[in-house]
Image (cartoon, rainbow, N blue to C red; front, side, top):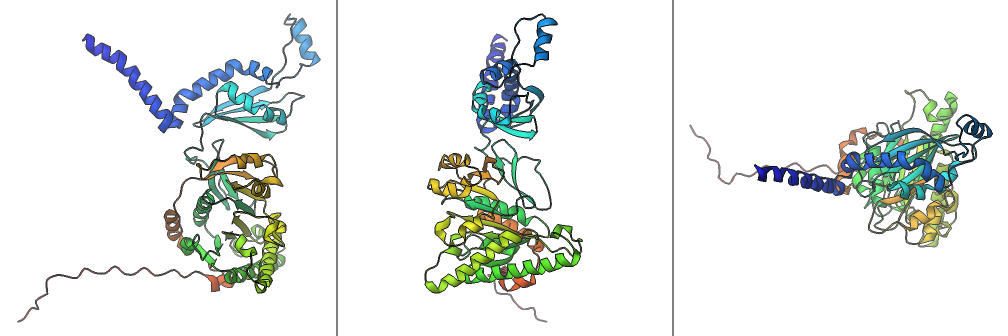
Length: 449
């Protein structure tokens, strides 16, 4: 009996400690919910005022407050005023705290102190987001959520919204084409750029009434597997020129339709006459700019002009651009920077030089360039996403194989709309060969009367 009680007293704590250690490595969400979150909330509640004071996030109290403290509370010392905590919420990835900033503090002051707050409260990261004037939200993560990407269950939804990756604060990064119609994705070889495109195509394939058009001048090695879900596919520069001309004709026809109904964009049209949205996927944009001979320059100039026209006007017609490449700067030729200026969304993976990071994010979020150049080569899929507002965040796409993406496109092939102007470029889907029937080894004997 004594041995059994000793085993119980010693074995249970050891098993519990071992289980928590295993959960910390293999199931960080479970470990954070059971251990990390309670400790972090206690540490935050106990050290909040002193942490804000040493981080320089307090202000001197107003005269009325000082008068009340000295004469009503009978205290001679008047403490500085930190931001007021409005709400504290825990989650499976971290903790969110809503703060009301006092007069004299601004969100940039909290952003500058985010690294000190991270160390003071023992969390993995602290991201400051301004929710409305005078209020900021501290989005803390208890562990590295980008180490093993697991998309959250609840993601934003909409008619043209596709969840693509996971942000470093545990929320989903989505491509909302109604808010950010055109985007540019950059990245070196083996950086995860193709993985990002697979997740994007897989999400778009599930949307109803969305036409996908692919341009892959590498003979279709990347986009050939998406053929069942593509309304058009160009695998050579000549075909790409024809597809772009057809898209411009489609855009002009849609503008005529908008003019007839007095609408500003396709979403104002009645559902019965509304044309399907079109997403153009360009795999390697440099192949459209680079030419080998002088006779190809005319075709290149025409393609660049058509893409610039699409970038400037196609949003109202329901045509959106997704441009990918390794580099995208003025060295590609005339019109490159003009096209890049039309691409609002920017996603930059690991790059080989700082100049490429400047091409993608230097003009909209200069602070994000340093974050791009610090992406390690052993973490493919990690990228920095920014937009014209100046905000940026680290993201990582979940792993998705090319075979799985092709399977998803084949499963939703029945949703592929037919566009008459793009019909000549509709990819041919090879018919599956019928399974051969087994040949009997024994020779059959005919029945006779």
